Amino acid sequence: MAKPNLTLELLLLALLATLWGASYTFIKIGVETIPPVTLIAARTLIAGTILLAVLRWRGVKLPRDAATWRRFLFQACLNSVFPFTLIAWAEQTIDAGVASILNAATPIFAFLLTALITRHEAASARKLIGVVAGMAGISLIIGVEAFGGLGDQLMAQLAVVFATVCYAGAAIFGKSFRGFDPMVPAAGSLLAGAVLLIPASLVIDQPWTLAPSAHSMIALVCLAVFSTALAFAIYFRLIQTLGSVGATAQAYLRVPVGVTIGVLFLGERLSDTIWIGLACVVIGVAAMTMPARQAGAAIADRG
Image 1 (cartoon, rainbow, N blue to C red):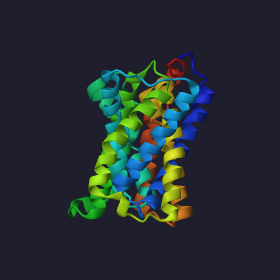
Image 2 (cartoon, rainbow, N blue to C red):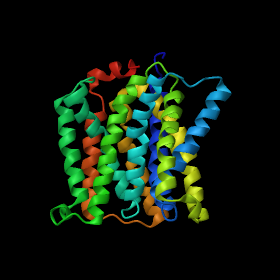
Image 3 (cartoon, helix red, strand yellow):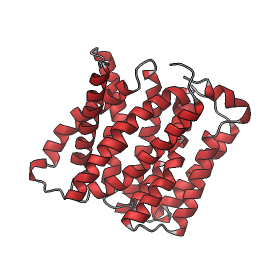
């Protein structure tokens, strides 16, 4: 890929944050009448089919070798099958705003996985401080109920945290698709995810027996088209141009989007503790993703 235009990449990062910030509200409305597994199976199938159609229109073909599709399948597990389903399940009991805040910790886990395992991007004391602040924020959001037993709310919050770890792994593994048209791994991983989720939906939910509301169906379509198909195409591009940690920077940009949409359209209210936790998460993620002054030129040369 040619040297990226940093201004364009940052605009795409902001658009991605908006698309994914809105996804929490779409999910919250969707799971009102569509069970989580079926919602996510439909989400991945619709989005993957749209991207496949766009690729064919552009004359780009998906790879046919088994090795690449195994990589698509692994990426699907990290980037859609597990995290999408966990978040949808969690939003049956927690607010969309809380889910978006907890999910904002993706860069923190991306840093930890990078520093402890892959070591493909540089670590620093500033990033370590960011990890501490971010983890403190997560603890405040989950709250003292963690010490009072494993209730439904706590399990849902932990499910979102685990989904966040999956996203961090996906951002790192996504760099292995360098050289592909960004839409190719997006389409391939979504279609691979649909292959896993559709049979599960048929067995678990028996979707032919469901009667979803019009609001849930509209939310599903918006979730699939905008917050998945379009968002994934942008996401895989940014992994190549900004790097895995840089691409996850949209996590702290999407927090105010997700919280604001939840407050305006769902009437959600956040406690004082959650607001403090939000501040800690944003500070922590910003510390981890804002480049050092001397590294500014290096970021523009990534990809």
